[in-house]
Length: 337
Ligand SMILES: NC(=O)C1=CN([C@@H]2O[C@H](COP(=O)(O)OP(=O)(O)OC[C@H]3O[C@@H](n4cnc5c(N)ncnc54)[C@H](OP(=O)(O)O)[C@@H]3O)[C@@H](O)[C@H]2O)C=CC1
Ligand SMILES: O=CC(=O)O
Image (cartoon, rainbow, N blue to C red; front, side, top):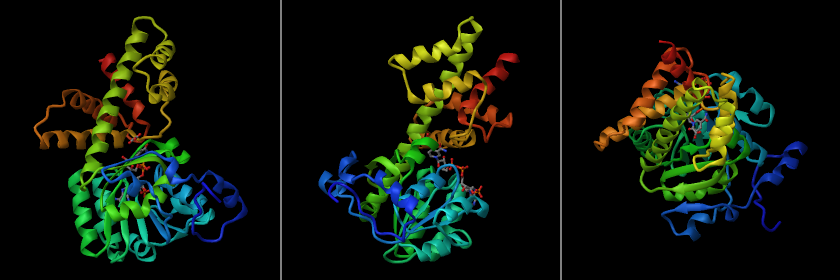
């Protein structure tokens, strides 16, 4: 069928077949790359089995989109029960990351932080033990460049290829296949998995050497963490001077500082509810890693540093697993003191 991506996959249930209509042709998607657009945008159909490690807020919908597109997906998660939904929807399961990597052609990993990304890749029964020549490992977790390079070295020692590909976009964009991939590393692997990235995301950037994808992601999330802290201050100040914070959300949404996250999260923040899309502990981790990145090039980032302190206070208030918009509670606590 012209203009649609035909995938190679395991037998599909009727409901999965119906859902396949959402698969878009890679040539319709914007691609930003240091490669020639021609080479990068081809997005040749991926053939083979796909592994997915880390099935939680982000990993679950990302893997689900691959399953819906008809791919043969094998999953693993430290807490096995989190895999049950996807198993019911057609995913295969293996009991260790090594077994996933060994049974798949390309394995994606979506883990919490540098420690877990490194452990799942290189620890006991880690993915590298199942990797080898011809296979690929794509780490989509948000980590620092040093961790990414360590994982890359371990992967390459097996003869496999490595791509770092952290994502910008939260739970809903993950569900909708609207993530932005910030990739770096093996160009051939980038091209090989392009059609998979195009199912999970709306755009992909190829940024060169391993470490550049991680750095781009940390800069973006540094900005986002500061924006949310600043927005929180504004909501509280508006209220303190007798303004309706809901009206502030509306005013902001119509002006030059409008951002989807303000319109999306503002009304809930006014009601002091923080349904988790991006856990606060991960935002604080990203600010901490961004501070390390800035330190490595002697760049002062005082606004991000101040925001980081607020997220640390929020964590100490027990808000780690709430959405990162709960950082407003740290400011409320300061107001009371
Ligand atoms: N949520 C979001 O909006 C976004 C998140 N990200 C980034 O993506 C990554 C995943 O985020 P998200 O899905 O929200 O996070 P979750 O906290 O929902 O999931 C974290 C995953 O890491 C696993 N994990 C944690 N520690 C270990 C460990 N020591 N060994 C093995 N597995 C471990 C968890 O397993 P278990 O289930 O057993 O706990 C779980 O699968 C993070 O790096 C985050 O910064 C990027 C963009 C958006
Ligand atoms: O990392 C979080 C995001 O929303 O992007």
